[in-house]
Image 1: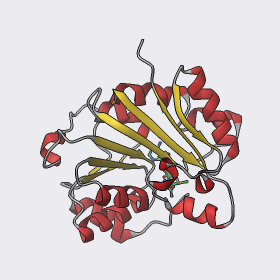
Image 2 (image 1 turned 90 degrees about the vertical axis):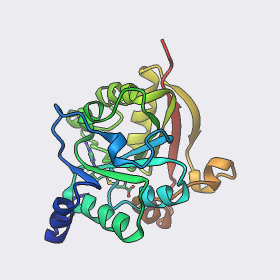
Image 3 (image 1 turned 180 degrees about the vertical axis):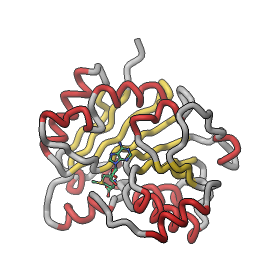
Image 4 (image 1 turned 90 degrees about the horizontal axis):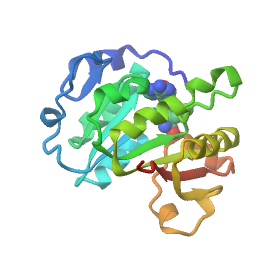
Length: 219
Ligand SMILES: C[S@@+](CC[C@H](N)C(=O)[O-])C[C@H]1O[C@@H](n2cnc3c(N)ncnc32)[C@H](O)[C@@H]1O
């Protein structure tokens, strides 16, 4: 998804450094204690938040947790920021940044849940390294996740789902839940599902939504 550049979004991002980190320097340690009212709360992070429907809804549902939305595109990040400011979502911080740098931005063993929602599929083999479930990304997620933490992944893209199952399995991850039709499941995971923008669009067309939950196994 490439959004058309919106000057208001760029401006909003510049005006609110207390709410959004804009391409932070990887050499500078981020003071998360200062950015959240209580950084000891459980922490969830979404990589590639798009316009933010998922992360803003979840943050409002769970005031007992902290949330970080990471989004590469400034326009999309600015849209999430606008919702956060308008709705006063204080337990949500944003980053306009590349997830490839995530292990520089977050302390080791600090994240309880890492969400990947409808990540770009990058179907060409030569672009495999850009897929957010490629092993170099898994290395980084493993660093920032707590040992008891886990990853939750949803997509409508069968090719990316199959690839991710193999990639996570080859990495030695443990699967806690796999679904090939989340929207027609009748379990607790389906019941508490929060839709993303892409999910809504694809589910309306009748596409099945694939989902997996997995954790890293301690050596
Ligand atoms: C297909 S969209 C899905 C958006 C949203 N998660 C949803 O489900 O509606 C993928 C998003 O991931 C972002 N993205 C892709 N690669 C990224 C990266 N390396 N770091 C951060 N965001 C990334 C894109 O800019 C885009 O907004």
